[in-house]
Image (cartoon, rainbow, N blue to C red; front, side, top):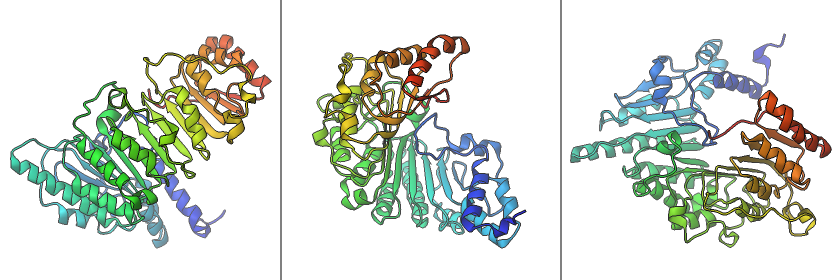
Length: 443
């Protein structure tokens, strides 16, 4: 049997990372903005499984503020084997740092406690998640305490000089986060932080259709400062936006400035009531970006299916596209492309390579037919109406050209027996693998 110590260091790190990821109660770090948001206090803190060892430290600074790294017992056990294992496990355990503020009691003197908590780990931290609760309303002293708290959080972020990813979850869009924003901007401009997520905790917890768009000045200010900085736009590789809205100015900056982005996710921010006079999918308004390979649009009313065709054509090097719950019922249905459309010279299959992955969730029949002009090697359709999918695919063989695998939701046996057979016949004729392993991303 091969001795674990004799394995290459890269393989040992991979094994340790696998151990770490199998633990329960760790927030999803895949940057997909999917599912419901849960604060760390709803996962780890409630269970009170705090480890006192340096590995997986989780330290409650005050009643309302918690710094946590890992909490995996397997890492602690493995780290006792040898110094080498300890160093590897330490690297993995301190890979992610979470700062949770649940707004019960503010303490203006947290800096030293912060510094003491992270003094052993800053070089290992690659991911920081900041969860900001709601600030207390006046009196004035509460504002001072909030500013002191924000300053201390900014201090901790600044101590972790090797951080690559920062995600900020906000519940109070009017609470001053200037110090945190300035620190994040500095680290992006320095080329350290390459991935940024700005998330409304309220939206992640509740998918209702309307939100108060007048109370998010601070998140908008942070996003604006990033997009206004040429150095930051050159360094940024990944941007996730889950916000109540993006105004016209911000949308124009987003279209023109960050041309080094590899991944862009926008959830809910493009809404009819604030961009009605401005269509964000006029292709002349988008700068060319040869780096963008992954684009995700979720609950964006302005992202109509027919406008996605020129968008995919514009981003020639795009490889993955997710379109979920977009468009609006006010939009009248569009006619499907005429028979023989795929042979025309200016259609997507003839002007760009196929996507590696196209994921569609909650689309009407006409939207599926329109989006079916997009060439993609793998297509995922997360829709519970299998009859609709079957009818769209039996209508024409031109739909979804270049596809070799179609993933749909698992269906009931009696449903599959009828409508599933129709889809299976079409897929066999077109040599498309039909897999019933899709899942709903945004229930």
